Image (cartoon, rainbow, N blue to C red; front, side, top):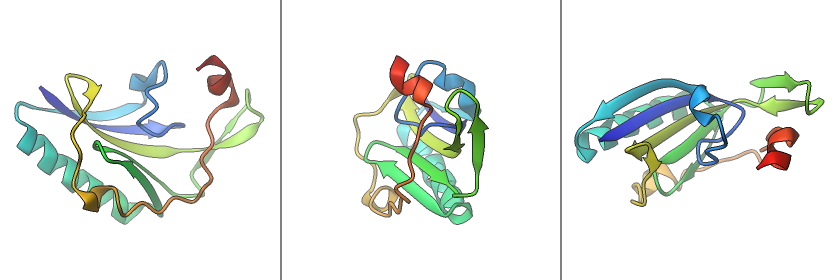
Length: 123
């Protein structure tokens, strides 16, 4: 079974830190890869139109964000960037398949990637 997952939170979707599933905002299930891939591509296009920056991995894991979308972290004593994550998974695990280049070669990140210092220490 394939899943396309939309997430929102402090981390890009490829980190899979403990508790990452709490960031899931939407999950759709598919029995075949082609249907999941088509839905992922449509979501990717929508996210890329509504966000300034994007960073993507070759295996259907992408992050999208706007620089002004941050939250204050008391534990870090700093602002953390908030990301929309998009992932195509198989049975809840990252794929080892390579997505089409149009989905990862258009990366335009801002270089501002930060995650909670508390998570870095515990990872």
